[in-house]
Length: 419
Image (cartoon, rainbow, N blue to C red; front, side, top):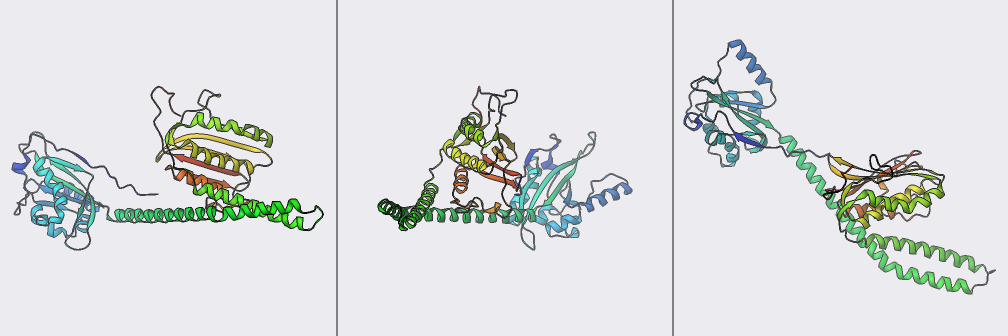
């Protein structure tokens, strides 16, 4: 799971608007040391204890630009001791460092433009150590409405997200490396597949053709017939492998369209009804709410030909896993986080061994005695090519569930509401 660092920054005018902040709230290099708190000593002590216990950095600046309060967390974040900050002006501490201009702007916006910031992400360069990524929130501190000087100062809260940002960056780098390795793997497999299809296809067909001729001339009682038959069976198997490798390497480029998966899926399901009946498989299909005979309307963005190819591979595998009958369930749905449209194919067959599950989409991996191991690889590539993906869950002895995920699409105006 990735880390979402797209924290929303909000900017709005500070209150009260009638107060001329620029004339009375300054970033003096020689500020006064007037306090801003009008409270009993006990209440003030409780307040300071709360602030000191906070994990976020807190700074209070009075109307004259003097820093009147900080906490230990802020000292750790900014790389300055509390003694170095309290009583100093913001400009005295942070101006004169061009690399911190964006950091300074967050506070200056309050002073010059009366704009407060909420969850503003900035980079801060401390006097010592590496830069830090901070989330800064600013607001004005006001007094009673009847106070002749309602503006008491400014509150600045700092959250250090440096570790989270580093983790996010490392995760992004790892994902990028994984993507590049996966792409290189696909390109290598594609080159291999094309070479196999090109270099092996003709010799295999020649071997098969010549063997067939020799077999046709061989007397039925000759022991050579048995050898010719084995050669012919082997050449046919090689032809099957070459054909599937050719299909993998020549998968057409996707042409995505907005597709209503309900009616599209129903047309494919009808092709499988006779086979399901012959195998004693109960076929359960999705239906629209309140309309048992109608498919639901679920719109996705995808290539119907590539999607059909992937789906038929999944259904064929599901039926092969239930030779003694069972239950085949097809379903459609949507998820919002992240946004996907999914198509689920679940069977009650023998399931997939946990040791085999990580490899079922790898080319040439098969648990079938006569399997080539290209069909699921083709299905996965068909989804990958159109920005989709396949998920699988399986429990040996209890069946397997595949989910084909596609980007959602908006239903055209005037159509039935989506599922």
